[in-house]
Image (cartoon, rainbow, N blue to C red; front, side, top):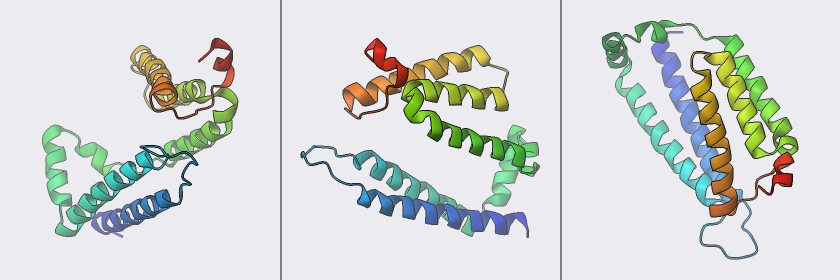
Length: 166
């Protein structure tokens, strides 16, 4: 199977997944109290964005934009990344990491489990900027926890941080 056909199939698979995700957001139960933005607001926004981006991807594949992408990649020096083989070991590691995240999410809480999984992914994929990535992981996980729990009033599991009042 050539690369163009694989890309076309992939674009339709992504579009189908996006559509299924968006349809699934309509099955999120509404809370008993009327809210301005219910629990399905953000998932629906993500679903719309996924549909738009997957539509663009399908359109690009149907009009034959793969050659243009390859030419652009040569110009910016990324042509070796296009020709690279799929690294199943990396994909497997990320899938195991995602399963681990789902397993420890309730036990460790959002902030700690997000930090641990982010850092594990960084350590496996790219070890060049550990200090920078560590700072980003701490800021992102704790700031997002604060935004979700305080501003958006979405309950996330605090884990051991419950004792710190977070």
